[in-house]
Image 1 (tube, helix red, strand yellow):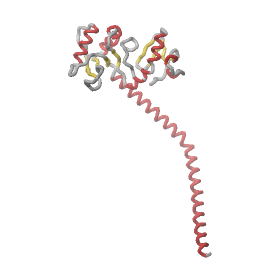
Image 2 (cartoon, one colour):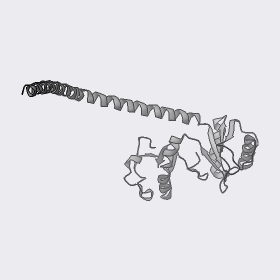
Image 3 (cartoon, one colour):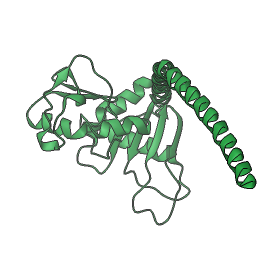
Image 4 (tube, one colour):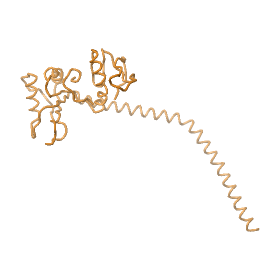
Length: 236
């Protein structure tokens, strides 16, 4: 009986100690819950501000990329030979197709990607023009001069802008089919002179997208420019 009494006293002391610890833990939990209620709004606000800052930084980087490519044009479909002088090939092509009797001034001309004898198509040529006026001369004349050929000329944009543009092409085709005036500037689409707002679309079917929903201001929507022929809406 004495041994059992000692064991009971030991268990009771341990239970009393645990009861005190549990009560203390409950108090701490209540304090943490109260603290969380007061800090959660601040944490959410800080997270929102951080996301906004990050988004603005990303847009700034994309804008810088776009500016660095402002003087560039991408030529697709020009015949390629191993060990070629790409700038000479482009100069000869421009003189022949655009009826220009002088050398266009380039800062650099190069093919995109690595050469391979297994390539089915010639690699695109990226040309950085020294003078923006010459770049615009080629860009604006391309639809007429290259009509019916297998060569395309497009502006160069960062991948992020290309993805945003890609989502606008179905809208452009629908609007043009209905006789609307269409103009794609970077990643902004203008229909009859008004800015198209993708966020107003309620349909995911391209043939039913309400391209007529336009606003004067709007957010830029994510888009990659496909390789189309040199038509006025694709070569700008």
